[in-house]
Length: 343
Ligand code: SF4
Image (cartoon, rainbow, N blue to C red; front, side, top):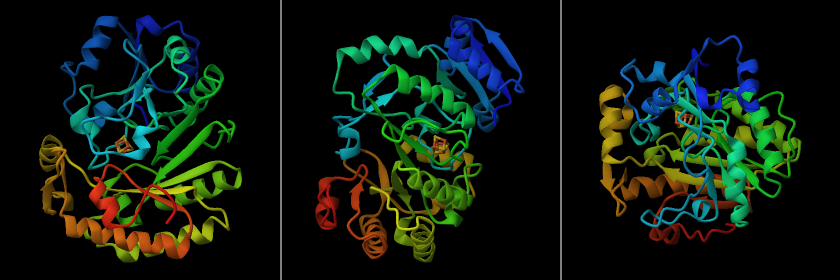
């Protein structure tokens, strides 16, 4: 997954760094100065402009700001998921290259970054006992270190006794995962197999994700399914129907605790980046409309049709399981007759 590791000299002696180096010993590692580390974090490094290759460099460094940050953005559309959660600044970026990933235009640093000075987060945490759910996969994928993620989460589990860690992933779940189901809320992004292979190259296949969810449900973990981004126009209704049939069969009577639906949302910058990087992508041929928060989303009628189709599948295959929307204004909740509770 990684072709190179850069280690900020200021974290070289941390146990976490030694552990990561040991687990990734096959990957060439280089120690860099704090100054070079900062330079790269600010996106100024003059090396490769080839983003997919730059993303496969793992930069192990120190978080010089806060670790715990409220997910809710008062200027953005209300999102119940975000209102109740914190983001924990563990990772930034990811070695994958999903076509629609907002990190392409949001993050300055081209590399995948891990902040290894986790002990420094303890003082922050003690000051605020409200930090009950902390998300690690908001500006990254929670499992971007693959099997090496396990000791990192073990450290977090031990450091913060009352935090529920919410993982969000599209990557294969580590086989060696042995952490407590009471401390980890697991979320997978799913979509029809075709859209995964076209828009999320390098991530886990649909079959692998479904097998992982099935295994973790069986082990007693709370699992959430994110159907986000939903395909515009619900054009792949057949793909969604097959997806729900597969979930029903493979989950063997176990159910996810929630479905979270969201649509594509692009800032104008991100859409421009996608146009430049992936001129053949079907994404840029869609029609977009500007929402009140400045983001471009599929047309209202197209979005609502897609949500309605998928909600009808949820009702049919998983009746009673909660449905939420991600980053949609209140009128969409109202039109779909959703109220942040069971349908
Ligand atoms: S897995 Fe997530 S963070 Fe990584 S490229 Fe895809 S959308 Fe972005």
